[in-house]
Image 1: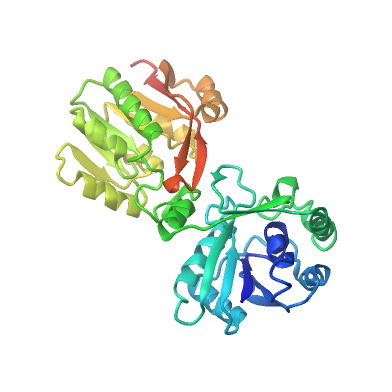
Image 2: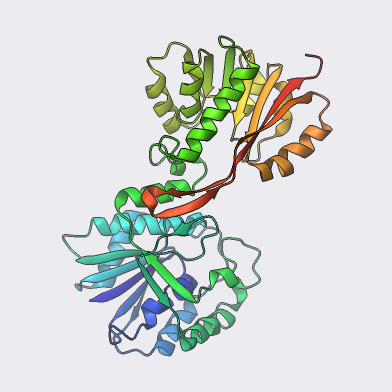
Amino acid sequence: MIEIVVVLRVEDAVLDFLSVLTDPDPGGGPAAVVLADRGDILSLPAGTPPAERLALLAPYVRPAEEGAASPGPAALAGLVRRAADGHSARVWTHSPADNRRSRGRVGRDTAVACAGLADTVPVLTVRHAVGYSPYLQFVSDLDRPLGLEQVAAKLGFVNGPAAGLLGTPSPEFVVQTPRIPAAERFFSADPGERERLFALLASLGDEAAAVPDPWEFATSPYEARRLDATAAWVRRHSPPGGPLVEVGACEGALTSRLAADGFSVYATEPNPHFRARLDAAQRDTPAVRIGSEDLAGLAKDGPDGAAYLLVEMLYYGQDLALLDDLPTGLLFLALEPEALETRLRPWLAASPVWRTVEEIPLVTPRVESVCGGRAYLSKRGSVGLALRRTGC
């Protein structure tokens, strides 16, 4: 049997998988490190002492390269097959929920690749490294505290061959204390967990839409309370019947609540995957129309609305000046408290166009399990601001 570590770049193998490469328990059996971004396979023969194994890896350390990326499941399947060289294998790779998306994709793609290798390579297990996880806490399957010698070896590699990464300005590649764990933790994930973990950390785009309901609006007690409170808040300020424009409706969790309250809703969603699910969910609801405009499109040529709703969607660098051009006299904005203070509050204080008519906590923070209990995270609460256009 061979241990195969599949990583984006060589320093990742030492930072998160040192215990796999130097574990004396297998009796110094063979190992291989697959560098996904370059397609290199680094063979570590059986019986090679730990220090010599790290010396074999050292020449492959490179400066930060922003273009480093997964080659995809098909290419990774070929690399794992070559690395196994006819042996059964245990495969170790990044977490699909690594907040560095380049690593998260390698972890996800490697698991997909290994699932298709059953006929040619007996892959006994695929385990993901918890690694540095600032947003999620994981329920791990295997924890390996490092001994003093292993920690010294890891730090020696960091301060030696990888020293150039200690001061790099790149957040994707900088090596700092939290990314040098003294205990390496691993977990296995079934395909559903894997895809949800990958989508959960994506935030936007096709990666986030890789699974239905990536943020678990349909099953989360926190999200249910937030959505119910948001609908009730809108209802107090806007009598049912008035046309509402919901910006960034995603799959329609709030849309359905507003329609049930008797509102006519124009729900917009730029992402085609989310929009298709939104359309399917609202197809039999005459009071709901679906659009594809983003905030800029609505500011330029959006329909008149009794109110525009921008609920939990102003996190992505949108130009807040566009809000002044929305064809409505009433805005409902909702964000987590920190984003409200740092992003919305300064803009609103300087705005001659909008005045606050209500500020309300919609839901308080809660720590909640996600992805079938594989991980948990803090939901940070949501605060609503109802704004009226000056003179209205």
